[in-house]
Length: 273
Image (cartoon, rainbow, N blue to C red; front, side):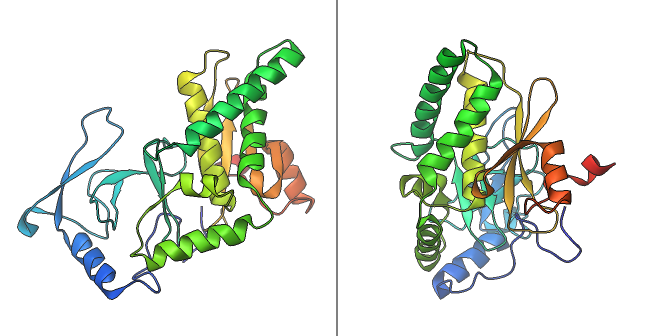
């Protein structure tokens, strides 16, 4: 989905700028293979890593062979599934082209993702009561509005930059998405991951209506830009981009892009066939 030569969101371009020498050395050792993979059990959401002798390992480029996991440069060696198009979101990580590694799970205490879920659930019930009908469309709008209200702020982008910079200086540890939510900070990728996580929670736990599937999408011509794609139970595709105030069916978003009314083209190459 990227132009030739552009980095994808999950690719890692060399040593991250400003990383402490000791952290860079540790990262090099990790990638060289200080940890041996333990492949997840069938159906398992997480990948596990155990300390092992370097001769036992087979690590290349930081990714664990034959799995969809990435070894994190962390003081606690572990890995989550990589987040990408059509992949699950919860218990995953999203690695940006700028060496920002975002963890999306429910292990942050207290969980800010679950707090957003509670807010969105109340909004769904209120809107369903007013409309006398419960639909997945109400859930979708509640997710979009909740993330926008709870994460966007006047200084949100600057706050996000501060969190990322402080984390980079602090040995480049992975960052929980919850930290951005808690501080009303974020950019398109953070809003998108929050929306996608909420969709998964509703699909897994909500009994009010059936839910479709969610995916995060990297824009074809901009490696660092992420948006949320929701396919409802009837197969209709919607785009959620909180950063750009877009909540539209994909075909309407495409028309608006063609008329230069919105900034991004949210279509996949297969959508244009």
